[in-house]
Amino acid sequence: MAIVRRLLYFLIIVIAGIKSGFSQEYRQSIDMRIPFIPGTVMINGKPTVYYELQLTNFSNDSISLEKMEVLNVVDSTVVVSFSKDDLINRLSRLGLQLNDKENIIAPGNSRVVYLEWQNDTSNAQLIHRLGFALSQGNKKVPFSVQGAPIRLSEKPPVVLGAPLNGGPWVAVYDPSWSRGHRRVIYTVGGKARIPGRFAIDFIKLDKLGHYANGDNDVVKNWYGYGAAVLAVSDGVISTTRDDFRESNTLSNHPAHPAEKATGNYIAMDIGNNCIAFYEHLQPGSIKVVPGQRVKKGDVIAAVGFTGQTTGPHLHFHVADQHSALGAEGIPFVFERFTVLGRYVDFSRFGKDRWMPVKDAAPLMITAERPESNSVIKFDVGDN
Image (tube, rainbow, N blue to C red; front, side, top):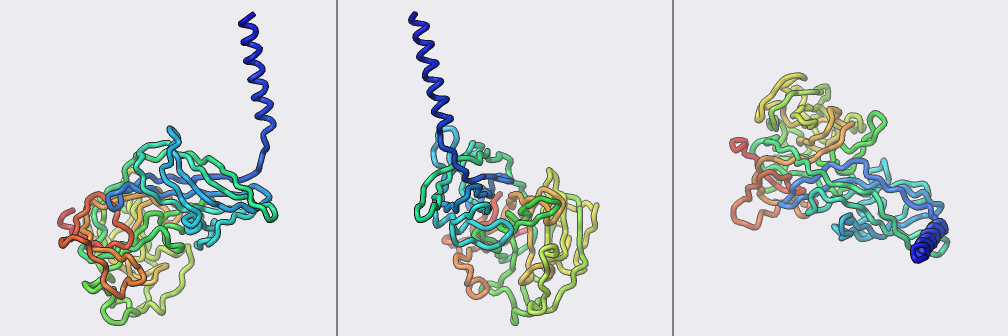
């Protein structure tokens, strides 16, 4: 009899649980997706992860994004959290290079959240918990959604030699820029990708922080113009383009559409599904052809002023396919470079000298990605 009573008690609990589950209120809310996880990269001595979280509002009401937390699945500890104000600066409408400046997602609309954060949880299983407020008339009903699980890749970023020699070169990029490479999505072959997720624009300066000698409008006055571009690794040239012309001045430069953003460029296969891209090259300067094998340090072209650009510089990035715009940008680091300083306030770029490193001597860095808007020097002799 005791066994029968225990069995009946167990069945009552199970049935009650089933009824309770069926009676739970269902609410249409948000779909969360992470289209690509590129892995971590070392920046300023700290492992950092970049990825995008896409949100679609399936409810009939507007939803405001109030908070986000990334949790460790194993123990539910908070790995990183983002406040409402921080999220507003990371939100953008899909297909637009503009921040929304608000946290509202209207019914049927989608947003992308651009995320970068320090990762001290190698190979951890993570999940996202988002806090929302549902607008119903004059009332706001708070609720949360947990989903979009990810496992961060343990695959190390590709290690490269110098793409240029000497310096000072400014490693121009900032993940927070609404019109920066990090937030430019291209659709090729029916799929949206971010080829420049880790792209860096290199602009050369003099010792005073000026990027041109004389009139800034004259292309040939820029210090970096015509500088030798180097192979960052042994590899095989997969694609070149050299049909863009160059204007003599910045003011006469044509406004190129997205499909012509690269200007003259070289794509080089460096193995392991890693393709190095060099863009905005000087017309007639490309010294290699598709299929040609090159060695690390070989001169392959010269810095120019072609494609979508506001001044002579080298655009460099690494992607997972041979298409300049139809590939996902993947992390990379340089074998070594010397840090001279950084532009904390980028509005002073080209006007004032950078803020030097705190130590009296420049700082030698190995196997890292330059910090955003840092001023560095390459020494090819050390590569």
